Image (cartoon, rainbow over all chains, first blue to last red):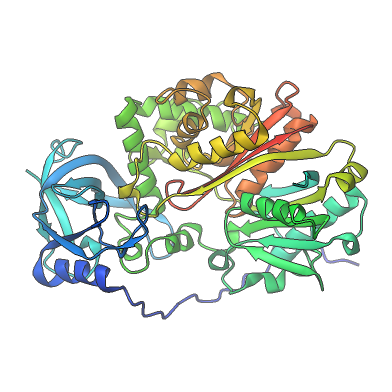
Length: 152
Length: 372
C-alpha cells in the first residue's frame, strides 16, 4: 500500500560559499577610494565619453575597455527615493524596521549614470529634486554603502 | 525555417506542493505525456530549467533526469526564467535535428529562502552585501518611483492595478494570491515594504513545474488536434546596472516585442490576449507601454480597462521562480485553445507571453503565439 504523501522531511543543508572574489582593478579603486580615501571615483569611456558609476571595466554599448578615472565631488541631485520600512534579514525575511531607511538614486554632478545609496536628513526634505552631499561612515568596510548622502 | 508547434502543456502551481521536487516534476511531465498519448521513448531531447542557487545544489539537473523523462537522452538545462526553456526547445526543433522536445521549468520556494537566494543575483563584489539598500524589493521600488515620477502615476493608481490582478487571481486555478473582493483600499492598507511597494503589490511565492511538448509541423499536427504555433520571439538583455537604464521604461521589452511582432507579421493591435510577468504592481503598466499596447504613461488606464491583459492576474498572484515565464506561455496557450475556464477571454487567435529575469526586468523574452 502506498504511503500517503503529506509532508516531506526537510533536509537543511547549509549553503555557505567560501569564495574570495577578485573584484577587478576598476571596482577595487572605487571601493578602496570610499574606504581609505573617502573619495568617489567614476570612470569615463574614452570612446563615447559617458561617465559611469560604479566604475566597471567595459562600456557595454562601445564594447571597449575603460581606463579614464574621474574623481567627483559627490554632490548631486536626488532623482528618486524610496522609504524602506523593512529590512532583509540573514534568513531571508522582510522584518519591520524600528526606523525607516531612505534609499535613493542619485545623479552625481559630472556622472552620467545614477548611484544607489542611503539618504539621510530631515525626512521632509528627502524628496526627488533635493540636492545632496556625500558623507562617509565611521566604520567602513570597502563596500558601496561606505558612503551615504545628506540632503542639503 | 521549420515551424514549431506546442502540442501540449501542463502546469502544477501552488503555495506549497507537498512532495519532493522530483515527484512534482514527474507528475507534471507524466500527465503531459499521457494526455498527448506518447511514451517518453519517443522524445528526441529534453531541456530542464531551474536555478542551482534555488535548488541548493550544483548542476541540479543531474537529479531531474528521470522525472523529466530525459534518462539516457540528449538532455541539457537552462538556468534562467522558464520562457527561455520554451525558446530553447523551439530552437532545438528549428535545427531540424530534433522533431519532438520536452521542456520543463520548475522551482519550489518552500524548499529555500526565496528573497535570500534571490539576493545572489546582485553583484557579489559589493552590492549583494548592502542588503538594507540593495535587495530585490528596494530596487524594484526605485523602478516604481522612477515610473511614477516620469508619468505622474500615483500610489492609488498602482494599488488599483494590483487589486485588479488579485481579483483576476480568484479565477486562476494556479494563483496563490486570490481574492475576488480585493480593492485598492485593501492594497493600500497592506504593509509598506519599500515605498511605494506594499505587501500586496509584490509577487507571491509559489512551488511549480510547467512542462511543454514542442514538435515540428507534421508531428505537431499528428499529435495535437489544435497545436499552438510559435509565430515569433524576441529576447533582449539590458545591463545589470539599473543606474544606467531609463528606469521608467523597459527598452528591452520594446526591442524584444518589436522583433517578435516582425517575425510573426503582426502589430501590437493584433494581440488579443497577453500574459505578462508583472512581478510588482507597477510593472504591468510599464510592460503594456513597452509592448506598444498604449502610449507612454498610459499603462495604468490601459491595464485597468483591458481584461485581456493578464486575465490570470499574472505573476503578481504566483511567481514561482524559473517556472513563471513558462506558465505565462502555458496560460496564453490555454486562452488560444479556449481552455482557460473562468479566465477565458473571447476566442483569441493571437496571444502574447512575456517572461522576465534579473533585477528590474533586466532580461525580457516576448513570444507571439497563434492558432495558424
